Length: 126
Image (cartoon, rainbow, N blue to C red; front, side, top):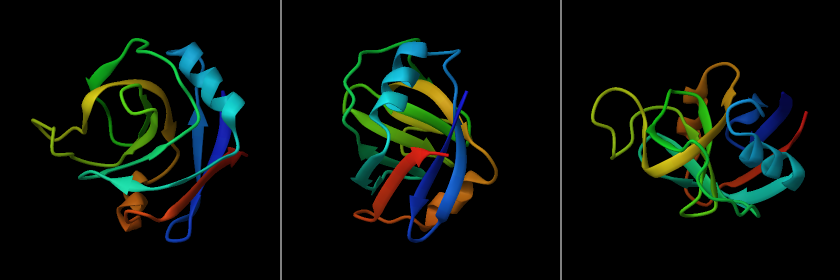
């Protein structure tokens, strides 16, 4: 497991964990790319942003849990799910298309509701 910090001006630094157990290729590529700076985009209760990582689907899924960190192969994006998205059919978050789950937020993921499109976002090792 790799501890990371996700920082925006509106949330401060949020602790998260990258796990190499479920999707080791995806997780390692993201760890190797740290630190990452990007601009946030939102889609329902999801924050996502471009990252310099390219990899295909790895045990990909559409429905995830609140607080999930995932990589979206179709858009080369890091995704943070904190609630329902336009693709959700129930209460759980759902991605626009399959994502590779690689970690989770420690604590209340709802803090990401403060993030707006275009906000700077940084991820670094803790």
